[in-house]
Length: 381
Length: 229
Image (cartoon, rainbow over all chains, first blue to last red):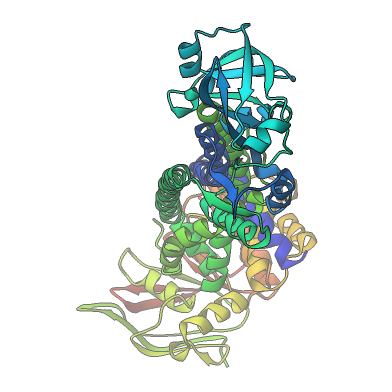
């Protein structure tokens, strides 16, 4: 039999046949690894989860015209710089001054589906317009004109020059499908599709602004904005600082908290393992003395106890990384109401960290083990 | 040249002379018993002969090497290679089987050999108990495992500290019989005991008192067989 095989036979026997004592150490490592793995999963998942939450506060980037106006082609070009999976919603807007019952109001032409996603906090009574001829009116407009869902309304485009006026069919009939309630200035607008706006004004669609909701961190957002502004001539991309800054602040604090808790848990695990290993060494002083009396060198004693510790660390880390995922999943479901995916890389990382933490925790107790006098076994205690 | 030679060996702890100028020769293949009351210096002598302690004064020559001049690391190697230890309290590793306990001594000495360890257990009549843990063995059986462990590496000397101190008469007889066989095979035995019956079976008995060698008895009728009352 090779020495290595006997070595593993001895440390496995020690772990398996001294279960009650080793279970305490294993439990400590496993709990530490569980919390470590769980918190790291949450640490990396919080930006995604919180990002999704923050997206309900509206757009965090806007495209504005670099000069006068820009087109949907410019938007497409700009979007090519953003990772598709991070793009939550894109709402291009074209604003024109129109008249209802001879009173001027602002009309916004937009992509309703995009607006729905980039402004999820908008509260609509009735339905969002889904086809040509349907109109959503702000609550302020509805009150001014006493409009309700289902009412018919004629919108007249007011051209800015005499020449334009002559060229236009300047009225279009709409059915009000929804009334928008935001508590903000959006309530003073009416909303129609970009196609209806084009038909009403008789002009090809040019955009005044495009709102984007992107699920990523503020650094990436800044990078996107810089790249788009640099490479797409028609667009000046800007961040909505109110949203991105608060998102960054909250995320930063949450991640710092998670990091702090992780460090504290690791330290507590180390203390617990060190305490258990100290007790293990104390109760095995005679065995250590015997091994030394049989000719074990200090190196052999260190190897055997370290082997036991590291094996415990590995098993605890393995179990902990799986339990950590369950823990993180439970937290994610209860707090963010969404599940998380298992990070395979976290498995070896947790095992390695657990092994290192256990190894460090074992250093002092094992050092004391090498000081045991082999003559102890001859004293007949 | 004697296998073991103690020349004016003293061990002094502060004011206490645990060993006081003791001289002793043990020849290869000899069976020596050491007796004496508590505090007479038996344990101190065992520690020094067993390479677990160094004398304050004097020389301890084992196979020509002066143990007093060796480093702790070197003493560990000498103990591993030349000495087989048997203890009163057996001192088996509680979570290893009888067979594994024997193999532990091989592990530290050279290469573990399960077959050879099994043969050692057969020699002490415990082949059928090889897979048992110490807690599943009687005191006598545990001491026999201890004997198997001590002889597995073919040591120059077997050093036994009160080997029958915790055994009943039947098991005492079995263990002494094992010593007799080892002696016949040429193994040098040094047995520390309180029991005159165990001491009487040795070729020579040394009696220590207050750290000094009080007297020495030669067993003229040496047979190696224990005569129980």
